[in-house]
Length: 425
View 1 (cartoon, rainbow, N blue to C red):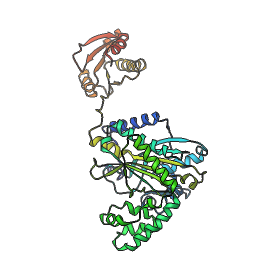
View 2: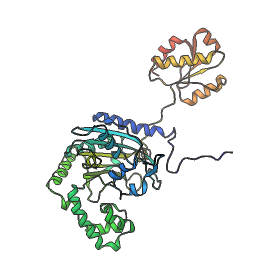
View 3: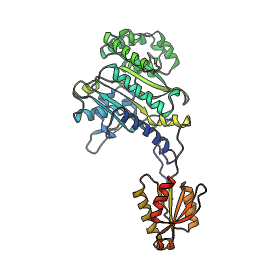
View 4: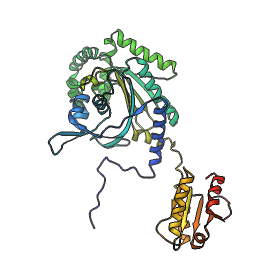
């Protein structure tokens, strides 16, 4: 026997039994974005490597360790997208969507990162993201957070998520803070783990995000970023908090909250849950006002968020919030005998034409009526329509109820349409 080929580690199949949970989440996301007036954008899954190095930062874990990068046949370095914001900004600049304009966009699709596969996190994962360009006040930051709160409410998971909020300040404020933080960390270098020592000079704010308890204890006396905020930064952050409070959205200020990518400034936020075991982030985002200019466009304020679909679907499954899976079909057409199958296909197509939304499954694969009715029952259909040679000759169809107490009867094909409408199937 030929050797069986398996999926690449960390790149998982989504089986038919699992897709209803995904469809449920995706449907809520699409409806909510429409309700807020946001438009969908679709970007390629592959970009030139330089896009992510410039946008994300060459000394981030994503670029240093996690990107799927290769040279194509012309020698160009290409990368499977590890996140969506950089590609969205590139598309906006390339197609003239951003300069002196307001844009509110969303996207959904696969992303790729080489990291250790774990529950709810894979090497090919799916992300839903929202990006807004051209608005710089705290009001749009608040709207995005309100939008996510509405998503949780619609999905029924609000009680299992909490909002953490921080500000990273303006770039010049962060430079001053970075110098103070590095000086403090240097004084306690011997207490840092190897990863934090490496980050101390390349990306020191990520030390704040360390999961090492000893490092977190050390950070209790470290300088605080908010001490370096200027008047505009404070006004922006205070304005955001006031809007969220007025909207009835609870939040916790977390001075240790940073984002893993270099392009963030001012507002950063995360929705976290403890319902999946250890605390995990379901959704995170913030402002990135310098990124458009950094990638070659005109200076444009921007804010957005992203959520991992696998983590969101896992939360729905864990909380038993996945809606019951519907039957495969409402009506099953069974046909046997010379000419009957062609007549069965014709009837099925007529049903689909005249009764939009009706799910009609036609029997394929042959077999007697007993076998076909077993398949009909397995499909979950409530009615089987049976055509044999005699029914075809008379232009009739036998109606057999597979659910409930309906009595079997024979009707003309014209009457079948009225019958199904009457039954509300």
